[in-house]
Image (tube, rainbow, N blue to C red; front, top):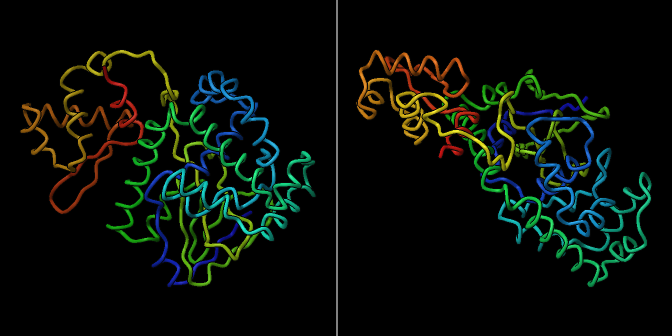
Length: 323
């Protein structure tokens, strides 16, 4: 069990990461490439990507075991600024930290001989690691990155809007059942018993496409507190890079597709505004919205006398695949 202890100051400093983190997605996607458990959303991606860059997988796999500890220096905070910022931070890791974290890793997993050179901060080995991280991202993640980023943005937008309207505690409740908020503690199932005290620093919540089932936290509590959490993947969600599909109108009907597209443009209009923009009667628009809600493509919330509508991550994924 993982228990994260908050104070009032921590709630005020808790936020959702603004962008997908390319190095967290690197580590967690590599875990998923080696995962044996079948998942329809990932199975096709695994088949297409496993053989794309054997050298990168061979070098990175010992540093990123699928179970247990992997070094915190591989997922620096600077990666929030993009892949190159993250790689620069990895290469600038102090030698003492390299030795400490790779020593922890070697206590649990046998490491290749070159890992000793990495622990010593040897420049050529560090630059090799940087090149391999770029190669892996280009061959395994980049083909699907736009889709990954879009799905993460849908989740991030839902959480941040809840936080803005209702406060951080209500936002934390949206993570159930993966994360459970019972003030002042956020808890989750975890491989080990662990308590993390934020001590006024707040928490950075990082949505991840490749994080599955349980969240992931940094081991070193001297680092800024980070919790990586899985997106709310849904049954029927399309596989990454799935090239087959019908047009949106063929799938849901032309009028309903028009309603979904207008909602998906991002302006959280009420039903009357949507009806005017689509050119349908108010009653017809309401019926289409009811079907879209029932299908998990749209969520509606009441604000005052109006009901506002926005697409869910599943609805956004369907819109991205229209012909």
